[in-house]
Length: 304
Image (cartoon, rainbow, N blue to C red; front, side, top):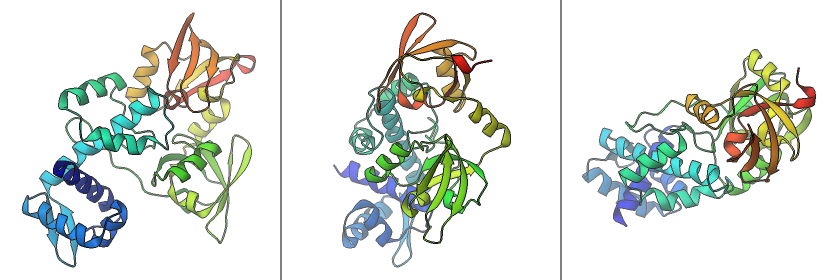
């Protein structure tokens, strides 16, 4: 139990350091849902173990050993989140709590096998980087979509707040990481209007502030408009695979399953939250929602 508490604190400090460095006692208390006196006691313990550098009234900073341990926990957590969504078809607003339970009980051997099973994928379902086995993690941008000007095409990269209520709303709007949208209008109250799949969507200020994005290159926007995610293909419809998005590991998974550009596929079953069942090369293949949403297809009647 003490080890679990240590890992929870180190993970929380690492994530908070992106916005605040040193990390204050009050911020940690809010993030972890505990009292400030309890946080102070734990920080003293972590400091005595050499995992953080803590100074009263100033805050805490991870030491090198503390950062290494935090990244190891984050890696296990995000691998489990990906397994729960991709392999078990669990809704992405439920996987955080489950992964919190699993991350502390994962041996190095299980972690290695889990990563191999997932194809060493480099992001969690919410778009955050997964540290590699050596503890290296790709830097992430922190620019919310609310900061982009009107007429700008942007690609959603990640969700900064994994609150289940917010994630459910984002799911309903179809705005998962990798989605490209156009900013139409920014409003004084923090809300904004965007366009996605030729539909106008109004984002409230809470949602607009947690959708982390980047400017989308023109060529990427053109490709997006020319096709649709496999995950949106209705049951019974056929399509031609155009591209496989994501990183190199995701593309490798697509190719290994037979989802090569130019291949004709047919959607057999398309569940709202879970995996999809696709027929490719006379073989029915079940794939997770996350992978289905980064495979771009053109419905066969539209293909040229």
